[in-house]
Every structure is written in C-alpha cells, then in structure tokens.
Image (tube, rainbow over all chains, first blue to last red; front, side):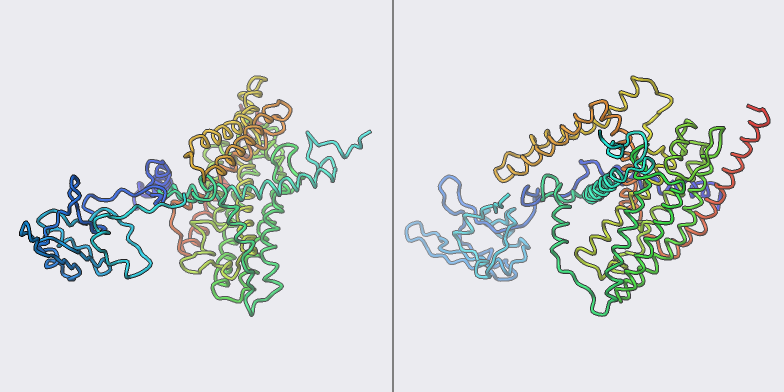
Length: 153
Length: 424
C-alpha cells in the first residue's frame, strides 16, 4: 500500500465524497417523485395506452372505413368490426366496433395496420376497472375516450 | 415576603441553589423539550433522508407532512399490544422502560446554559458515560425476554458493539478532559459546566485546541457515538435485512414507540456530550474575540430573529399554498403555527428574555448540527458487516484514541513545563 492510499484512508476521502453526493442531492431540483393524483405525470410521446377511435373534428363522423385490417392484424383477435354496405354511396360503413381491452397487450399492430389513421392507442392510462365486462369497449366509449379521474384533493 | 426557594435561579443551577421546585420544573421542561425534539427529529429525519434519496417524503398529513409524527404516534398508541406467548413477561415489560429511563436520566447533567441544567455534578461526564451504558442492559433484557432468535441475536450484537465502542469513546472523552487541565486557569474537571467554563477561560473550543488533536478526538467520538446509539451505518442490532428489527422484533405499538423515543433521546444526549466537550456547550460563537455590548446584543437577538424568520416562512408558505377549499384547514393551521413562532420570536427579542434564552438556543443549534450528521451518515453509508464493525472499533478507533490521549498529554505537559521554566 502506497503512501497515497494510506493518506486517502486516514483522511477518509471516500467517505467525504459520498457525503458530498448525498448533500448535493438534497437540492429540490433533483426531486424525481411525482405526486400522482395531485399532478399528472408527463408520459413518453410514443406511450401506448387506452385505444381510441378518431372522429372527423368538423363533422363528427368516424374516420373508420370498416376495412377490417386492424382485426386481421391483431394477434389476440380481440377486435370485432361489424359493417354494412351503404345502399346510396356503395361504400362500407362501420356499424359497431368492439375492442376487448382485457386481452390487449398494447403491441400497437392494429394502429400500424389502420390506413385511415382512425384507431390509435392514446396517452390515457387510467384503465383500471372493477369488472371484466367493462374492459370490452364499444364504439361509443372508444370514440368518446376516457374522462381523466378526479380525486378528492 | 416571597420565600427564597421560589425565585427562579438565574445565575446558578437549581441543584446548586438547592431549590427543589425549580429542579422539578426544569426536569419537566427538559422532558417536554426532549420529547418535542424527538417528534421534530422524526419528521426531519424522514424529510431529509427522503431528499437525500431524491424523494419527497411525507407530504399528505398537514402541510409538507408536518403532522405526520403525531399521526404516527396516534397509530402506535391505538395499536394492539402483543406480548409473545412464551416471553418473560416482567422483563419484557421492564426492558423499554429501562432503555427510556436511562436515556432521559442523562439529561440531568446536560448544561443547556450556565443556569439551565438540573444540577451540576462534579462527576458529570462519568455519570453520563455510566448511565448511557445502562441502556445496553435494557436492550439485552428486551432481546432475552422476547424469546425469539432474531431478538436475541440483535441484543447480543448490540451488547458486543456497545462494549467495544465504549472504550474508544472513553479515551476520546479523556482527551477532552485533559485539555481542561492545561493553561494556568486549568481546572481539570469532569463537571459538564466546568468543562464549558474551561473552554471559555482558555478562549478556545476544544475542537480547535492543539489542532488537530482536539479535532481527531472529536472525530473518534463522533464515530463511536454513532455505534453507541446503534444508528446507521452501525445499526447491526436492528439490521432489518438480516434480523427483522433486532431486539425490537417482538415489540409493537406503545412499547415499540418507547424504544423509538429512547433511541432518539439518547442520540441527543450523546450529541450534547460532544457539544459540551468540544463545541463549547452553550457559549455563543466568539464569546471572547467579539465581546462588548454591541456584539452581545447582536448575538442575543439571533434566537428571536431565527424564530421570527421561521414564523415568517410559515406565513409565506401558507400564502403560497393552492387556494383549494379542502386545504383551508391546513392553511389556517400553518398560519396559526407561523403566528405562534413569530410571537415567540418577538418575545425572545426582549433583552432580559434574550439573555436567558440565547444559551439554550446555541446549545440546541449545536446539537441540531450533530443530529443532522446522524441523518447524513444514515443517508450515505451502507451498513458494516459485524466483523468489520468490530475491526473498526478495536483496530482503528481504540489505537487512534489511545495515541491521541498520549500525544495530548505529552504536548500539554511539555507546554506546562515550558511556561514554568520561564519560556513564552
């Protein structure tokens, strides 16, 4: 052991370095805690949360073309699209859309398959429910989205 | 005509002037003050430790979790009191009392000021050491009576640890006591008040006397006192990752809270030994270099200003709180707390009160520094292994403290010889 190391041990420089680190981390700017119900966390841009069906903001009509690509892309086969042929325009029209969130693993393959930018996995994350039945989302709930939870304080 | 014993002792301790009434009042005041200090320390420890680990700590009960210790105490009080089936009931019952009583007994000789101690013993320091060692007995009793492996292991560890660190601690203390006997004014005393007065007459805190001898002695003591009070990084008796909670494993509710109270009270007591011996006890900074009426008044106004500032801080924080209906009570409470603190500060600014309060304030401030060190250590250092702990005690601290003791004696005696031979 060299004289340097002996001095280092005797003067306890390693201890002092450690003490410095903990002292500095007391600065309020270093805090990482989010006080969740009081303040909402900032999520990553590509976070995949609650599924949504987009509507045209001007007319309120759905963007879905009922092409069924999302249902085919889904590895869990949890999307069910029911459609009919519009007698006037001769185009397919989506009647109901069922999304079983309880089996969803949020892989996002359905979103990638969607060619009308209708289906998306939104940033909403408060998806916990008291019943399994509630996890099966119908068209109305998918289009309306979810109200952010409000807590007492 | 008011009898003599009713007068508040302003320049002597009640023990010296022999007024039992004021002794009782002082004991009650110290008991209340130390308990309040424990409550505050509980909150501070959780907050500071949280900030060191970049967390926030308690935030929900009261503004910034200020009422959390009270909520915890309530919870502990109404918890079911469980005594293990095959425990030794009497010893089990007596162990927390033993620990708690010894921790509070120590404060009898702690001088918060020249007149602000219950009594002045001529063997004050010895009394502190002896009484604080009795705490180990309570710990071992608790571990033995619980009839549990974890408790017994914790208690045995605690016993071994306290015994081995006691020696280094005693040597470091002797070093400080030696220093009181040097110089022409040397008194060579074990009395806590005498030690502080020696520092005043020698015009130096003993940390800085014969630098770095005093400093090393204090450092040895500072390490030994952490081990003595079973705090991190030497908290092996209650190492939660190995022994659940050591000797406190089978204790719950109120009994556990008594152990908790005792732990913090003994931390304060041991810190106040260090403050008395090395940091000048109740003396304000620079009592001799910056003397004179103006400096006296300036330093005497510090406690009042600090309290008024704290009160102002409370009021300011209350005004910054979000204006929500459910926070109204908290805001009012914080306003009231700030008002009380501010009023106390204003009262302390009155000169006669300031003169009586300031020594207690400086003493408490120095003890608070040591308490912060305790938390800081806990936030920084990982726990020692048991053989490492023994190694540090016997192979490092004991030789260092012995060496310091000898060198202090040599330097001191040679200095005395030099002056007596006419050198300067």
